[in-house]
Amino acid sequence: MLISLLKQHNIRKVVASPGTTNLSFVASIMHDPWFEIYSSVDERSGCYMACGLAFQSKEPVVITCTGATASRNYIPGLTEAYYSKLPILAVTATQGRNKVGHLVAQVLDRSQVQHDIAVLSESITASLTDEEEWSNNVKINRALLALRHRGGGPVHLDFQTVYPRDYSVKECPQTRAIFRTSFTDPATNPGNQFPEIDTNGRIAIFIGRHRDFNERETEAIDRFCGKFNAVVFCDHTSGYKGKYRVLLPLITTQTMAVFDINRVNLLIHLGEISGAYAYVSPKEVWRVSPDGEIKDFYRKLTQVFEMEPKAFFNHYAPHEERCNNEAAYLKECLDVLADIRGRIDPEKIPFSNIWLASQTAHRMPENSIVHLGILNTLRAWNMFEMPEAVSSTSNTGGFGIDGILSTLVGASLGDRDKLFFAILGDLAFFYDMNAAGNRHIGNNIRILLINNGKGTEFRNYTHLGALFGEEADNYIAAAGHYGNKSHQLVRHYAEDLGFEYLTADTKEEYLSRLERFLSPLAKDSRPMLFEVFTNSEDENDALKMMNEACKSAMGVTKSFVRKTIGEGSVKIAKKMLGKW
Image (cartoon, rainbow, N blue to C red; front, side):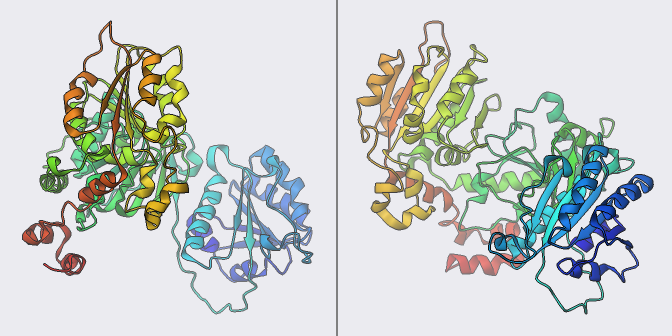
């Protein structure tokens, strides 16, 4: 893998020092005409030789040594390389970090390196599993890119060896390479050569959590989609409300249907952590982010564009270009989504967070801001669209329940003239309930509290906790705390703090009070708290109903399914359904 990536990243020069643990690497390249190899017995001298070679040739240089004190002798030269920003790749060899501290000869601890001898240090284990192979591939790519990134500098790779004796392989298999394009760092891509987009296949954009896109950014994305017949897969944290938006989660959560629309040739990945769990299946991924970091969520990353999304989309779809694309892919996606939604009868959804979302999402007030609790709430509300002028987000960064209400309070202070809604479960509310008593709270806060008396996520049939049934309530779902669904506890707390309190135990009660909860902000308004009592059984049944929306009608939609998933998958679909 290292040899293949050195070639793909155009790195030829090597200064090798003698040793046994690094022998397999040196032996594998010493007859390869690609590499230009020099020998140095003294590792200290070898590293300084590499510094001079890198400075004069303006190319990266690899240095490699064995596992004992040899690696310590690289420190002076790597210090020079660090402060001179020289691209030196130190490949040290080890028998494995698990042997450190067990009196094994020639095994030193290189898990920590001095701050000023390497801009990056990675540990490479033997690739004995697919997981290790993927991880090592990312680490080596990241290391090679770091040599020239943002001024560059020395990089350290600590390689485990298993002392192979078979050198019969004549041609090195090519492994996946990841490249970076950056306007600010021409060394990583001379001339800023953007790769061409292959239009033979579906192209999609997936946006994780992202701030709201402004008008110009949205126009750039829409122009790109128009040119390349692409779509934008979103959830309620994506920040994109353009005309190519597809709210993906309801499609990808269908357990009784396989849709071909989320299989794409090229996926352009924007934004940060998504809580939608709305997976797509790309053949290749391009990551666009100003941080330029290697974030390989789909494990198909080949290109990183260190730039703002607008710059990326403007490059591939300039302002002057016009497109007459009929948006066939968008229509296909929206047809599938409409078909799934058409199979769902909102009246049959049990009284649950999902039912609340079905009745409320499309009614959220224009220009309001919605903060969604993680997991159960975010998943439920991601199944239903909100008005275009509503902005929504969730704390998917740390992905914890511990600060949802406080985040809402802080956000509400930024614009007193807008309504800010928090939608969260009881454990999240009680965890952060002190925020409701903050003296800065204004009248623009509305809290929808779904109180099911536990972490109902752990009782959903899709969760590992469901294996334990009701026993999960004791220690896994944490049931019975905080008044055990008391109808007075939150009421007294909220009213004593000056909140207007609403409550509902049934669908009818909820609908009768919903208009008040969503009423426009007025000078005499008070902050509101709407507590709705549900139970984990209904929550679970509602989730199952949504996930299996395609189940009951699949038998009479053979032509739709065949058209959607392709002839090759019809047999698989039949097998999944048991009966056609």
